[in-house]
Image 1 (spheres, rainbow, N blue to C red):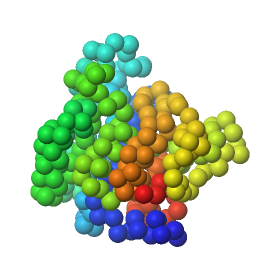
Image 2 (tube, helix red, strand yellow):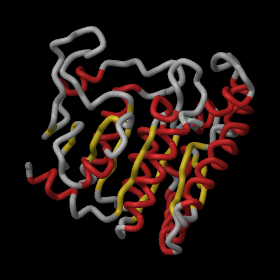
Image 3 (cartoon, rainbow, N blue to C red):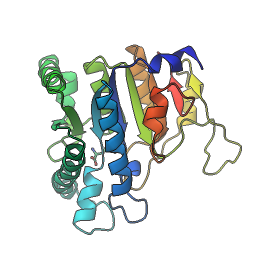
Length: 265
Ligand code: GLU
């Protein structure tokens, strides 16, 4: 086991980000309740083991689309804002229910870019996050998509999760996604593409591997995950990109198992 992986066993303050591709069914776009329930159970168990968890979740717009029985994301910004408003409630209702089943309390925080760039706002936001943690509750964070338009938008939750990780001095950021980690090619089209287990430094070559893309419902793709890892590793926070499809991966990462891709700090 590498030293970087070994250290993850001792991480106490952990930011976990989960993407829409993990939270929703690919075909129907409806929420994947089986996966959400297992994920929350795993988070609750980590909390019981004495870890501090900060949970960054996408999926609001997807949940809104499902709730309103639409087939895809609408074209206009106001309609997407409306779906975010509708879906955020749906999502929180489900999280709250699952956390409560395991005896835990959550507190929702919705951020915009200002919270990340303005020093005063950042400090206020940090204070609120820390108070939620001190109360033993779990902060659940998303971007405030119902009011944020381009100028005040971070735009994707990978970067948002990195900003949060830096804000709370996390010991690790774990990004759960629909792929096993960073590959040296595109595994969807190239069967020889290999999973990279460990990245020492985010070089240009590594950035090129990330490509673009994302899914029908999600925003990020690998590109924004690498951007996020650049910010965290610069701030001495190791970051792991790992599949959120398999149940138990969070626990495996935090036991030092060699799954996903770790970006060393
Ligand atoms: N904040 C968006 C949502 O909740 C997701 C952004 C992202 O997928 O990165 O739908």
